Length: 224
Image (cartoon, rainbow, N blue to C red; front, side, top):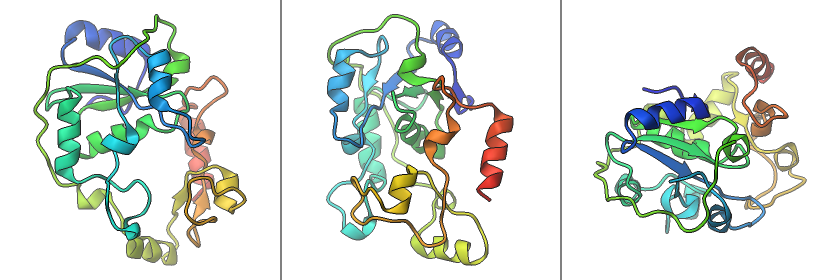
């Protein structure tokens, strides 16, 4: 598989070799309620398709016990990917402008053994031209539904047992949400008892790029 994080040079080289296989995915979604699709239509990477996190990457009409933004049913996810032109042999490079949401699509695809990576720096790190307007219509692709791998997921009981055994459970939300001072879209303020705060924003440098590997190792070691 390709690396989980790539830069613009990798993207250009891969697109030059097999342009039909490379799918640029814009996965912008905002905690403050801004419209990701509107942001896409205002400016996006050339040829990118818009991936709707709420519609394409989360389950719908599920019991409240399934939580917020649970994984979609495999058949629904496969249908969404196929409609976007993402197929079995596609190489997906996803980006956003917060460093937060593109990784959801990448993790989901990589869990199923598909080639996918986050574009380091996202939209802010892109120095090439941009396009405006609606998402292009790509030919429908075949994306076979497959169960989410159980060994990559943990349920609530497993989380509790892991914490009890001294394992680290990391809460990647901002500190104010972790503390419960700001609920935003969370149905209840606060965090899972015993979890440790490792904010997603802390893995990014001031330039919006991922921090060097050595710094990240130190950062996560401090979180257990």
